Image 1 (cartoon, rainbow, N blue to C red):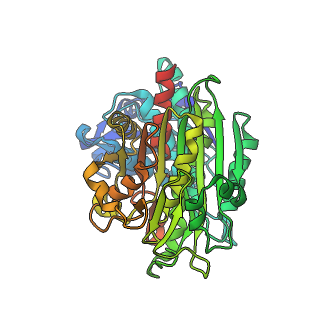
Image 2 (image 1 turned 180 degrees about the vertical axis):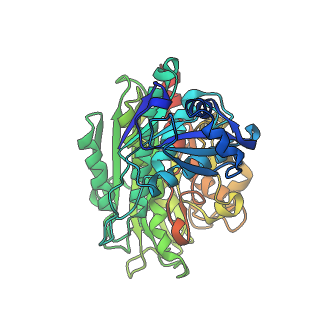
Image 3 (image 1 turned 135 degrees about the vertical axis):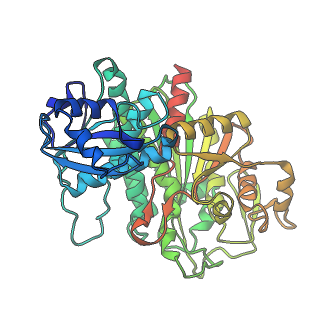
Length: 498
């Protein structure tokens, strides 16, 4: 699939379909006006028939428009100016791509004149268009006997003016890289637990290291983790025949002496809940419990493709949580890499157990910042639904940087408090800390647990339980969030360091 920037006349462009915007009440955008003029009023005559009103996501496909070289013109409703926010921007891109795919066009060109979004930032508009169009091209068929037919679309271009071309090229390149990272995360998330095991995740990380000279990957096995003292992480995989892994990826794009930014992903490749067994309904969706790890690997793929001038370390704590005779039991006490002891009151609160040892391990890298990403708590879905990633941090300035990156990337997040008062819920009579704090403020107390292991650096926790996948019907599947947010955060850090 080729993405291109086009700076010529859209009236004489050779493509299967030109996509031009129609504002509310059938107002022509500049590109639509160009096509209307070339066709001697043909477009405005069609609009006067009332087949389209310019509402967000409305489409009308025209064939062989006189005076226009393209085989088709797709009129795309953009809505009124006040309606052109990120949600509707994505909606109109999806509507256009649905028509392009259904028509089996070999090529298509977007000519939306920087007016599809209320944000005047050309870079942001082009990047989002590229990302969201790319997302519509993703199809999962890895485990199907009948593979999806190859997409007819091989070329997608975006029309801009000549003076916009340089910015648009940069935006498109970044958008393609982030789109590829999102697709990587979605593919890993969608794979079933019998394929996407901790060892499989390790293999994918090693493959990334082989693909990019800037990435170096190493894997710690169970014996090496035991020697280090990572007994909390290892306790989660006790009941599984799949060995746990600690995956470490170094991306070196900055100066050798620059502190790295560290990403830590929860990689529970299947979560039965262990001895604290989950209900059977929708348990199949617990293959998505490694979406934090998937987003980290997807982000590293995008960072390497973009060649960001920054150092990044990504660590994935990978394990499978299964019930068995040797599985960890409620009431068991384990010693973490930090030396702190944990009373495991619920084996279904396992994500924090693998993350706490990983968060201690990464101290050796002297990180500039640390972000962990995890499908950690069902309580997060109750608090924020399926719209926003929860952010909790030991540094409010860092939290604000993450929230800002989420807004820029249209991958939004919301901060929850991390006050000392919540820490008391984790008191234990038999160990230094309990792994659960009861039903109240479950997302916050989970982050409080992790905060006990992050005192040496600036840290934020991203709970993506509500946004990592969609449930039910044709929409079911991994979303690839929060790869765009993480990429934007790292791009902002790189810009500041430069």
